[in-house]
Image 1 (cartoon, rainbow, N blue to C red):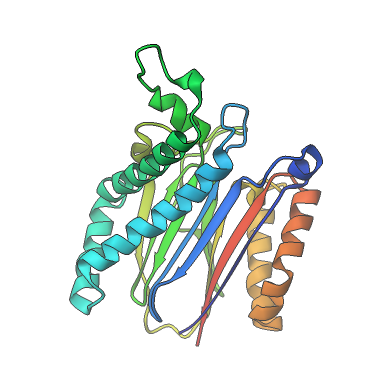
Image 2 (cartoon, helix red, strand yellow):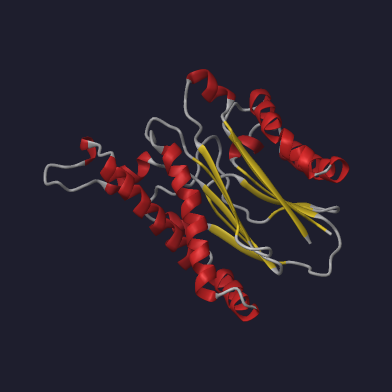
Length: 276
């Protein structure tokens, strides 16, 4: 299958008006002709999380770098990939999740030591690490796409969606909250709130399919889940009609319009399209 990938992060209309930085981050790693790693993250952007723009960047880097270590450890042979899919299926929301969270916390600590906040250093020089992690609070979504399986991973809100000719469905289903509440990578036991899934790919299928990772600014800009799914379907259909380059060239503009007409939040979308 031919692989086409693009992604954009745009500052939300509300953040533009208030002079706030972009809180979303994304990373695309085309490891080989057959292996792709994708990740997006949404920094919380609240008063309690003034460094969340950096936290979201650390999150996508943590996911991609940890996944690359797993790929290196198990190898990219047929036998190694078979072992890896078993491990991710059994331990994607436990051991792998812990490794990602540990990596993110190391990055946060390194950043904190460079930019210390004295209010978080107590009289005995003890550092309030829970408070430090909160400064960088963020969600995290990630995917590993191979020729034979797809691994999806999520902490907090956002959407990982697959679109085909016949169906639109989530690859993982995180816990839903009302309002702006969400699980966060900044919690000490964040890995316990992760969700993960492994889906085998139909290698015999000739039908094109599209994976979309999106931060919650995308889905929250639509009045209903049905409107969100319709937009995902529209992107899929436009790729088939106008070609991937047309969508890639206009994606940032369209996401800006989505934010302006919707919730006003930052919006990130990463797409991976596969076709014969």
